Length: 196
Image (cartoon, rainbow, N blue to C red; front, side, top):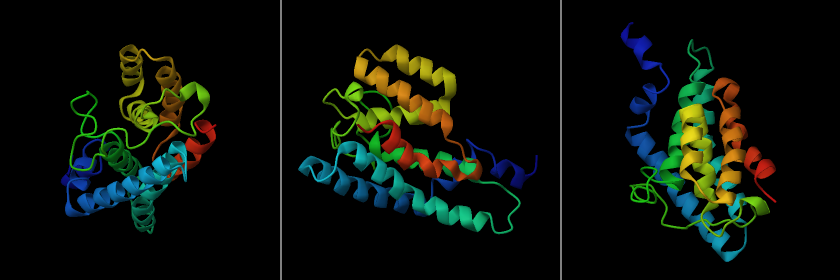
């Protein structure tokens, strides 16, 4: 395998593309936008689920620009790379550095604890907690870790609202892929599948 071949590999290339000044700037801008959006949700001017959709939409724009550039005569389909970076950006901001209680809401780009809650979600998904964080976790786990991640997440969870939300977001995660940049449909999926 040549050097260029090893660069265009989902799961590896994102580590290269996601670790530069551009990525830091992209994630910092996303965090600032997400904080402002969460404040709007706390004031009641938007719901939390709409805030989630708006944050997901804001996070797309850099990848649409990159996608347009890569599709102008390039030989590589970078859609799979873009979706990994996109979901990693959302995870870094909405969840934090990891999955455990000591890692969630921590990290350079992570929002503070309970920045978002559960307003606007369908009733079966509401539990008074940060359902935006749970929804993002379900989407990310399903897309990145597949069936093994879905089974593990279900095994770890014991609240009915969270289990129902995982079921809905696992489907969203499975439906996203980098081909034809269908991940740009995530904000609409959030609004149509999760909102009351």
